[in-house]
Each structure stands twice: as C-alpha cells, then as structure tokens.
Length: 67
Image (cartoon, rainbow, N blue to C red; front, top):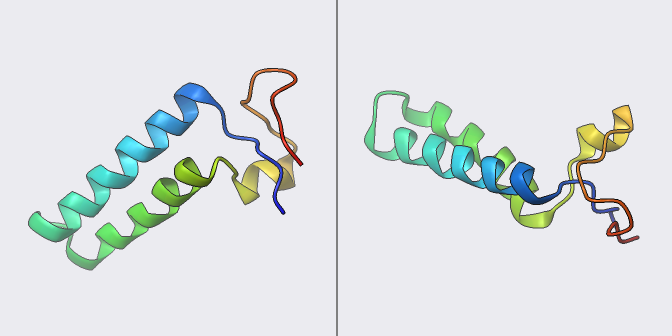
C-alpha cells in the first residue's frame, strides 16, 4: 500500500518522541495536545511517512524499501 521510507534510527526516534508526547499528555502539563504524539508513533511503527513521500525523502538503507 505505502512505500517504506522510514528507516532504523528515524523509526526509533519517532517511536520514542511519540510515546513521550503521549505520556506528557496523559500525566503531564500538555493535556490533550499530547495526542499529537500519535503521528510520530504511528509513522514509526508503520515505517512510512506521508510527508516524506510528498517531498521525496527516504531514510531507509538502499535496497530495503518495499512497495
């Protein structure tokens, strides 16, 4: 369906940031704005980023992208 365009460290960073934002939303000062953390979390877990597709970016190692 979507082409994989998020690789290694990018995935890890997205997942950590997403979980962090969700945690701050649930237990910290940012409240409902923490739901923004769903975006990096889901793109990290799925391995694809629609914005990367639009601008033609790819952080996957060469030859590992799926269709």
